[in-house]
Amino acid sequence: MGAIDITAPAAANQRQAPLSMSRPLLVLEGIEKGFGGAQVLHGIDLTINDGEFLTVLGASGSGKTTVLRLIGGFTEPSAGRILFEGADIVSVPAYRRPVNTVFQDYALFPHLTVAGNVAYGLEARGTARDVLRPKVAEALERVALKGFDARYPSQLSGGQRQRVALARALVLEPRLILLDEPLGALDAALRRQMQVFLKQLQREIRTTFLLVTHDQEEAIVMSDRICVLDAGRIAQIGTPHELYYRPASEYIARFFGDNNLIEGRLGPSAAAVRFVETAAGRLMVSTKDQSDVAEAPTGTPVKIALRPEAIQVAPGSEFENHLSGTIRDVTFAGAISQIVIQPSGETARPLTIKLASRAAGLGLSRGQPISAGWRSADCRILLR
Image (cartoon, rainbow, N blue to C red):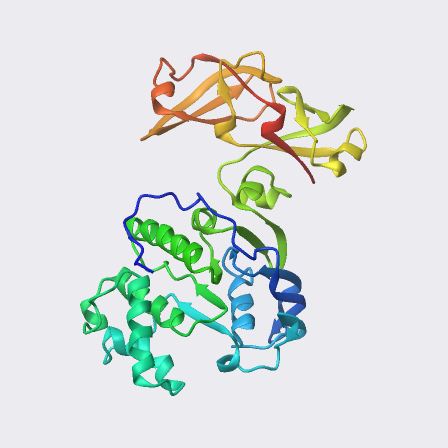
């Protein structure tokens, strides 16, 4: 199979479904972990499906690296089971697990060539030279490093060193590859290229990838599913689209971008919608996939999560929610401009709108009256 072009412009989120994505490969059951009396993980239940790209995402101290270390065999849980294809591997040492890890610091041997670094694990297994050489060549070709065999790590760029570390993991043909914030040391442009490259590679070789990162954009671009950790507990698991547009809590809504959070109280319900009384007026929210909200008592305090890009200026009749207000600020940020509006109503809080700059530049300025609106399906009720 030919090498993947690291500069290829194909969008990483144009995903094919992994071949065996519905079949569990590794399952964490009731995992607890503490260090020195401090509890780090609390009852983690997580399934990693065969052939998927799963990301464990969280802020510093959330427990995401501990999850990776438990799966890799670098530490043991205080309680719970780790099942690989149904067999508990908690007592299996790291070197005997069908798992390989790619670290942020690459961990390459400076005195070995690229080929020597990639071959290291095979040599440790006693692989014959006539078998080893073609395997190393194939792994380097997969990561677009054909012809780099004789170079040393000091002669490579950061992105090339990262790909050597990836080839060293791939050559051992693990069932699961663990990626421990592997792009954290790269500059922004190279990091974006590597995000696309890694997703393309994973899709092509159909090996299961588990990425650990604190970067929300990275998780959205690369993942089939995302597991968000908050203080050692799972806050939400879902596809990038689900977490971005259907957050399960205020924490998730704040964690993924610039959601507007509108305070209010539940009003009456109608067919698949719920009214919310707010300082900006009565708003309508779809409850099509929120049975808990549909059944909550009238008067319950809630927040509405509303993405800035969902709000339209001068909306048409198809928008169920409308409000009027005044423009407080307009900020140009390249292709996108940010508009801050102050809705009418003494206690209404400002809302942020994001528009294509071409549209935002059509006469929008500070102090100008504005009409805005959004569809009921484009916002979500969060129970406090």
